[in-house]
Length: 374
Image (cartoon, rainbow, N blue to C red; front, side, top):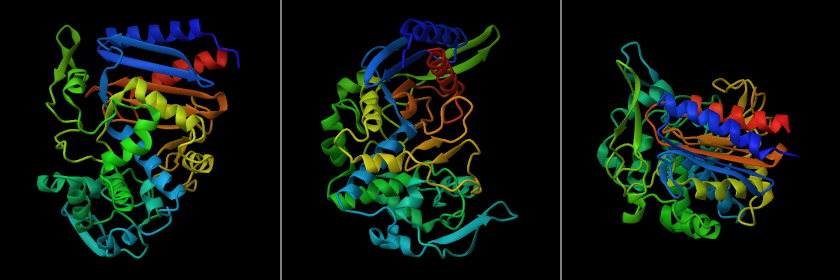
């Protein structure tokens, strides 16, 4: 495929200039590869090479890769019940929001919760209105570490029978997956990731607990404020936390990593290259294929869940089969196998984050406009 890098650069620079002027960003960076070669890496506003961003939910695809690595080694099976590794998950109960507005127990769960359910957000664990209502009272002591959090979740009610609906489990589901990795590997979750993924890929600045040098390169958390004269940039100083108020001793499998644009590009390229020797191509194929039947309640009409990633099915911008995910603070990435393309977008902001972020969608539109003009 021919591809005009000057045209792509012109489009990207124009979009970023608009976002800077409107205070939608104050520090953003983007990296694009085509057929394994970087064709654009740009830094805007206060962004610099080597800046570290709080990845939030862009931790999830990394956790999924860790699970699939162990599955490929025959050390776990994605269709096994979670209770095989964590017995307390063998007696889960279902709930709903009662007329009083409070969570209400409606009986035992009949379908065993599996690893696949967690990977595809079809497990019902701490998700939807019921999950939000229960998580509001989740004790801070249970966030002391991963084991404590995962031990606490079975006390709460599932929103539906596993596999019958789809609803995003923002924290709990991937915490459980990370804890299973610890149990199976007999390593802490950070140790396993560093040994198995980060060190082989050269992702040396992707961490749960940044060191002093890394804290010095941490992106500020941007806040967009509407003043009398229009939008203005301010900042939310989060202190030494990678995700909200989670302690650094808690390596949250769904949201706890921080890392650089350059590091995440390496991870995205590994996915594009069908595992890059770290995972078998069959694992990446399964990860990147729709795993939830069309018509499942709660599933988007334009995308499905793969194993730890969203997969486009009839998206108006990205071609079918593109896969990736986003973070609550505005980070975003996708892999487009059809065009052998990866894109990683980084910013940290309280304004416009998550899967519906306008800045992420605009980035997709700019990149695909350049692709479609080639």
